[in-house]
Image (cartoon, rainbow, N blue to C red; front, top):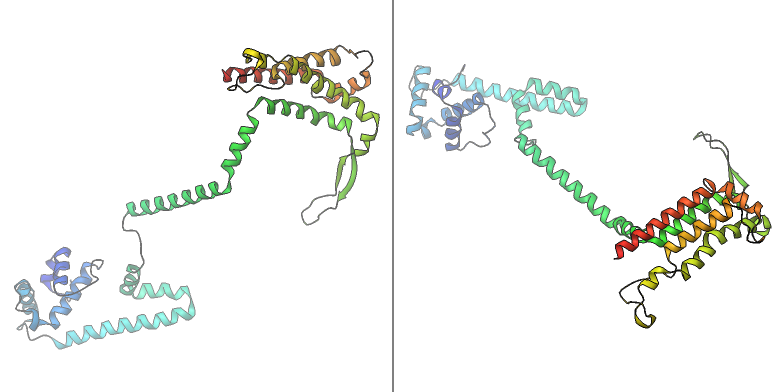
Length: 338
């Protein structure tokens, strides 16, 4: 290296690190080899009286003496003064450029890094960066685990799990299936029994680009007319009253679990209305009334039957499909109970 000591130049960096540590230099692990040689050369040259008697530095001082062409104690003052002036000049330049950076922004920072690479490296060493790709992977894993634990905690605190389980338990019964099938039928016959009527208009919002939105609600005044009650009672008779009547008296599950003297078994939970008998009775009543036109001696109005048949999803055939679903559900429930 130009201007350096030939003995230091021949040493490996690891050997230079050990020598630097032995003389008290710190923060040297990340230095380049050439910078480490300069620091050692400066320190050993300025403290020749202290270290020249040390055997591990004997070769250094011999090489230095040969280079200078004089005994080791006769050092070139001009060279030391020149080096110190150069170092001071670099530091003053760096300080001046830092002041200029605070007033002129990031473009000056680029110039500072270009003109004073040694100071830039010193600043870069202060930035905490992962040492290896494995450290980066560990950091990412820790962040992922923290996010997953936080999301899990929020999910548990929200009560979604409890609400989901409660909803599942409520819907996982034959009774719930029966009510859902009946509600499905009511959704389609409601507009026929309670037709929609205009209530008001939501004004247009030009900022959002939405037009005027008319709002319709069921005409509750229809409750006061026979136009509502006649088809409503017909549907209730065929879908609720007659099936419940036959399901109560033809309760096969309750009869099967009777023991001596007609007492039910405490370990069995019987239905008040047998769901299978309910489904069969509803299917028969629907077919007889809606498909065959039976009026039970004029008790049922053919006009009401026609209105319901046109309002129900797929007519009376759709109702039969619903009874098949509830019937199969009741059979499956009975099998699970055994």
